[in-house]
Image 1 (cartoon, helix red, strand yellow):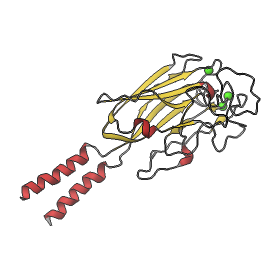
Image 2: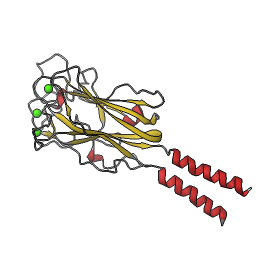
Image 3: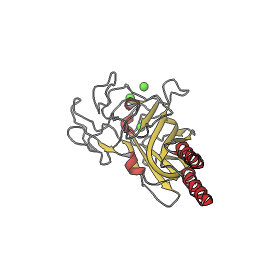
Image 4: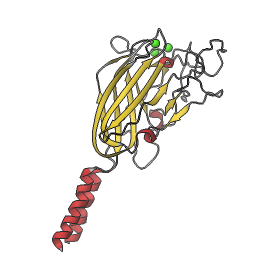
Length: 263
Ligand SMILES: [Ca+2]
Ligand SMILES: [Ca+2]
Ligand SMILES: [Ca+2]
């Protein structure tokens, strides 16, 4: 009877902490300077026990219905990166979330309109909320459906890149995929040049940020590197699934202490 009670308590402690994801948000408007290598940064702090195992990044761009029409009207201008510095001195460095999408050349302006990519990048608009994480299938380079868009890098296109309805349950712990249509894989195009087939480099956010302490500071670095089109980010967040933290360890400790009392 007593043994059953002890095991039950320990089980409760573990169930209450395992797979508990938390979202950390910065809702200060980010005005992205046009055609600036300096860019702009914004930070949020996380304070969870344990280590990061899964992460989702959510960017809420303005929309055509936001006061001031704050959508970004040319996604190929944008380079968005995230850095994490944890409480133990760990530093991920800057990791690409997306980078000059659709841009396949740093100099050429002579590509045919039907080519994959362009020197300017993709002209579609960032309008609404976009989730990024390893659990998703699509990339901004080739979403499955973009009404009115004819290709990865066609600068003349002016469709809205499909945005993602935010869900509180971003992850489905224990599985690799949850709501795959509600987000995008992070991608890199650091060299400004992609392969002839237009395949972007996938970035694993869980790989980049996993195993760091879940307490630390996240810094978003946004640069708009093409002149003319502009836009703003209304808020952004990181959603973290940590390993079971201090509370779970307390449950195990409680079991050991009870055993000692029984002995
Ligand atoms: Ca546009
Ligand atoms: Ca638009
Ligand atoms: Ca611009």
